[in-house]
Image 1 (cartoon, chains in turn brown, red):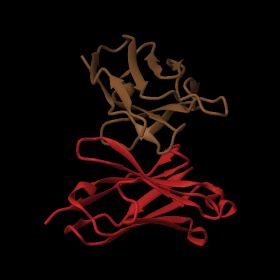
Image 2 (image 1 turned 180 degrees about the vertical axis):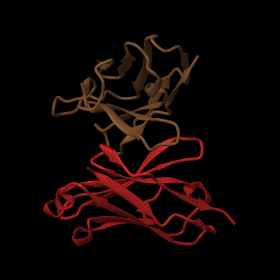
Image 3 (image 1 turned 180 degrees about the horizontal axis):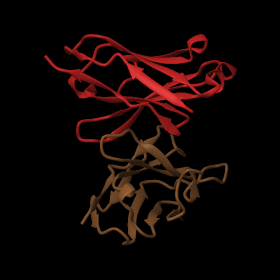
Length: 112
Length: 116
């Protein structure tokens, strides 16, 4: 199975600060279709996960544009330009290129 | 509005069985590929099973950790997906989520605890 490694484990930031989360995969996530199925979800406290970004950098329509995703092959990054209170929670990357789908262990974003 | 509502979670003894149900609304269920994902007490997410649509012959796929013990099924007339869990082990203890897609929309989750 593809192992997804996220860093840092936790992040303590003040409102308005930028955030950056790394996700590395044990194999290239570039598929035979030419697409890279690396995605991000956010689980706010006490809630189920919600979709954020798909195929590395594409934001779902409901996601604010302070979020961005980048990367290729095995190294990916989620960035928040300016953290807001509603961004707090655990961020997970997951890959859909190789069977089975696998998730990172999560990065907890907390308020400083 | 997409809604996914899981039911059926419980405390069960090792070796016993349990069936989870996910009732859905707000989208064309018959065309949808549905998944079950679980979250361990340590918060690790694990994909469990997938079922495709009728047009894909209802093909099913399983994680190795549950293959041969769990069965995913669906009833398009009820817009529902199920997870039959047999020979449960303590390591199956988790919150079980039903998802649309892979992971576009998630239900609220249901707790399954396997303990003697």
